[in-house]
Length: 291
Image 1 (tube, rainbow, N blue to C red):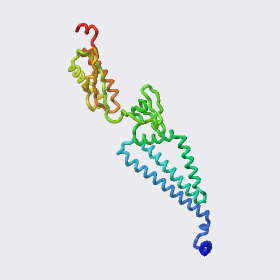
Image 2: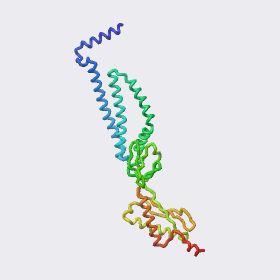
Image 3: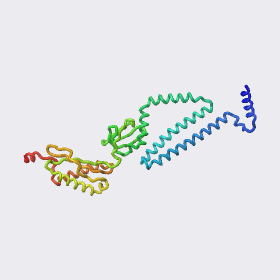
Image 4: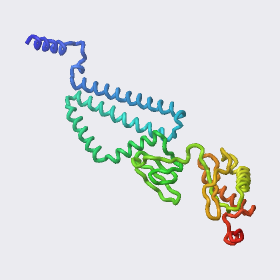
């Protein structure tokens, strides 16, 4: 009882005290001031988080060689997630100040979140995979790739889907959760190759000489002069047929140039074979003559 009496005495002293302004004796006024403090702290925390995220991504931009647009997307994603968390904490604190029980609210939000997560597992998986694709820099707009059984040019990469347009012009819209393996033809030097057949009576030395002539011709062209990292050369005989054998030539070229150079090499080889009178296969009458 003595303790209760002491507390009551202290309360009466505070009420009569002239040292405290009148508005501080009002509980509503105190709550309003507390809310303003929470809001200010929330605002400062959001500004600080945004600054830290921007500083981290900018400091790693050159080192990681990320696409600037994707870095901006990542920055917005991380900031949005952290902003939701901070705002939720601030709202919970404000409700507590006004005597509202937030434990039931948090429990309801948790149950609702679980229900939403179970009902939208695929969407969440697409979102998470989209973040990882952007962060790992697996795909960029304009690159030629093979993924999920589709080969073509990347037209769009966002948090839920990836759009790829194939050689025939068809647009493939692929959920990010389905992208498990990516073959990217636009990262680093690429191997350009071409195949052609010559008749069995053609000497391999003549074939290599012709390949060297083609190599010198294509390198001298202004359009392809700077495209080669390793010159065109004989690689192997890939197959022996009844009346011919198949030759493979290769070169190392800059990314994105491999298909164009392969087409040009086949064209030049055909021209050179005609000039040197090298046949792609023995004719039937020639076979009988040899017999």
